[in-house]
Amino acid sequence: MGGRSFCHSADNNLYLTLVKGLLNTHMAEQSSAIGYHNLALGDKPNYQHINVEPLTLALGALVSGVSLSRACSDEVYAEIADALWQYHVLFFHGQALTAESHLSLAKHFGDPEVHEIFQADKDYPEISILLNDKKRPPEVNSWHTDTTFREKPSLCTILYCEVMPEAGGDTMWLNQNVAFEALSQPIREMLLGLEAEHDILNYYSGTEMLEGAGGEEKGLELRKSHPIVRHPVVVAHPITGIPCLLVNPTHTKRLVDMRKLESERLLQFLYEHTQTPEFTVRFRWKPGSIAIWDNFATQHYALADYYPMHRKMRRITVEGRKTVAYDPARFSQNT
Image 1 (tube, rainbow, N blue to C red):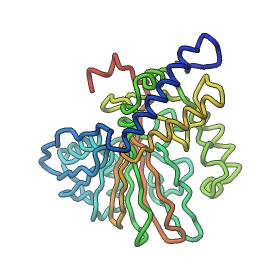
Image 2: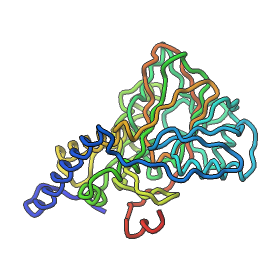
Image 3: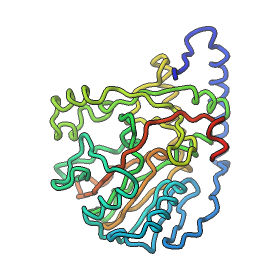
Image 4: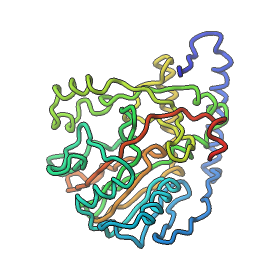
């Protein structure tokens, strides 16, 4: 599926539609400043094994009544998964999660993955250690969806907090389905026909993380093993089928078949739109906290406000699926 270009006279009508859509969306966002976003919670599920309390209208829920440090029944894991696909990010406090139990939890969602760059646990390569202190400043304070530089972006991520500063170090998430649905109809229709390129080196090139993983030699290796990939700008969620934007300022390189300026301006508009505060949730970590997030429906941002204090997290991602463009005719009856 190719994107559309606005560089020819035959595309004037499409260009005018884009401009009109941008203006309409801007007006809608102006109205939203006085409470115009029509967000609402769905019916609260009647779970038998877990307690779930929504945190915002856009996404996020606090889960209690379950210990993830030991094996749970299939019914418990099924309820957690159901809540994840509804609320898109789940938070747990007071969990004593060993590396083994962390890996076991991840396997209930699919196959754990090994990250290309992050430092790995010495015994479990699927577990990434995210360690920051005076010698290792944080570098991931950029909105992103995990691993969109792969043909199959991660399905979900499970992050466990081991060490956290007394204040600072929060993480934010945004809802890419809500962001898409809040766009004006002309913009939504145009985006359904576009693809974007995603590149592993778009962000990691020149970072301390890449330097620690092997520097320039590692970069050349990644360029060979990870060619630039294309994903639809709007994908069908692999579990629920809902439409989700899949562009982010960290891994997205450009929009396909557009001039450089067109791509830059449209991507910048989408980034500013998705980061609307009403589409977000912010979580305050404690040692023993867990976050599990739906990677296709969200982006996240790790605040880098705590340097030079010590923050240590354990991270596992679960293998996803190849992206499929959202087709309203195909998916609307199932969502």
